[in-house]
Image 1: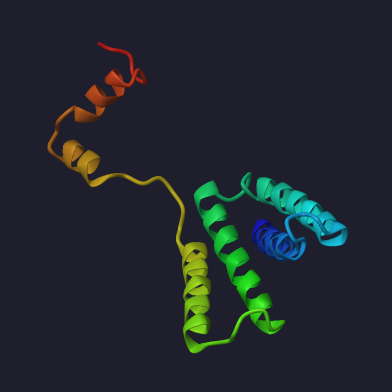
Image 2 (image 1 turned 180 degrees about the horizontal axis):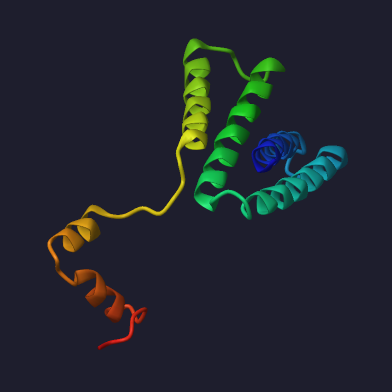
Length: 137
């Protein structure tokens, strides 16, 4: 369910971005209202999603899909020309989003930490002590 809500949030991002463009600097009432409502709904749904998906992944997908939806809508409505380069770049964004979705999330162990542990050193403990996360002996 969080992934579906994330896509909905990205669609809402495209809605508010498009409305902002049509509001002429928030001077036209109807698109200005759509902008404010779309922005609020997009932020609220993104906030909910971040309780279920890491913020780094959620934000990257939200921003990428939102941009892709905005450009696609602009091309479909004649606001921007449809070119091979634009279509390929949009496909790249969508491919990157799919890649982020497919990545397994979990703790990341740096090569330096793994090497220190394999060498039998206590560099990890020293770093934790210096950071105040581990009591000194």
